[in-house]
Each structure stands twice: as C-alpha cells, then as structure tokens.
Image: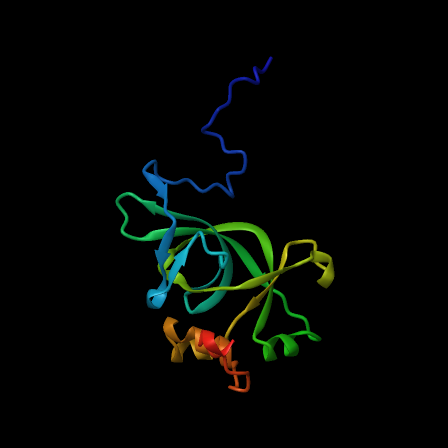
Length: 175
C-alpha cells in the first residue's frame, strides 16, 4: 500500500512546465530595462513590452529575480497574446490601444529585454468574448520606438501618433 505522507520530490508533477532555479536566487523590487527604463514592482504599470529577437511581445511581470553568479536580472512574466479583431483594430490603432489577453504560460526573460512599461485598463472578459483576463494597453506604434528614448514617451502619449492630440500643460497654476 502507498503511504501518501511521503513524496518523491525528484519527480515533478508537470515536468514540461517546471522551471528550476539555482538555490541562491532572491527576489528584488526594481530593475532597469532597455534605454535605462526604470521598472518597479510597486508601480501599477506591471504590463511590459519586451523585445525578443526583434519581435515585440507583451507580458505581465510577476517576479523580478537576481541569480547569484549571474550579472543579469531575470523577470518571470505571464505571456500575453495580442488579440486581432477586424472591426476594432482600426479604432484601437487610431487610439494607440492594444487589446491583449493573459495566457496560462509563464516564461523567464532577461530584464534588459524590457522596452517599456505601460498603463492598462482591465476589461471584463465577457465584454469582448474571452474567458481569459482581457486588458487594453495604451501603446505607441513600433516604428516610433527607433526614434524615441524613454524620456520622450510622455510627449508621445500626450500628443498621439499623428500629433493631432491635445497638448498637456504641466503647469499647476493653469488647472
């Protein structure tokens, strides 16, 4: 008869999804991505755009790790898949919005692959016909990344893609 109090820890329940880290790994709260972008786990903007081999993908940061003996920081992300809808894509493009859904897979990525963090609005899954968590993200188009650095992102969000958005005045006396 099998004694259920004993477990063989060498046998993984899901060996295909297992991620084994070295014993000297600890979690940190902040990191620097590409172009000196600062990211903090305390920030509500935990959706990031990641450049992997020249392709941009979306992810939701769950952990920021540093491994002893390795100079790079590593992030654990929930992979997000961009949703295409022929009816809404033109409107979302004009508004600089991207619709993504959170997938069930996690992945470890180098922290230097983070291009930028983004603000987002969670949607009820039923509003767009998905059973997974659905998110709208404010983004800028891919060609604009080559022309900008992280200091210019606020201006892009304020002016829009074709510079026909309203100007934002930061002077508190004007409010």
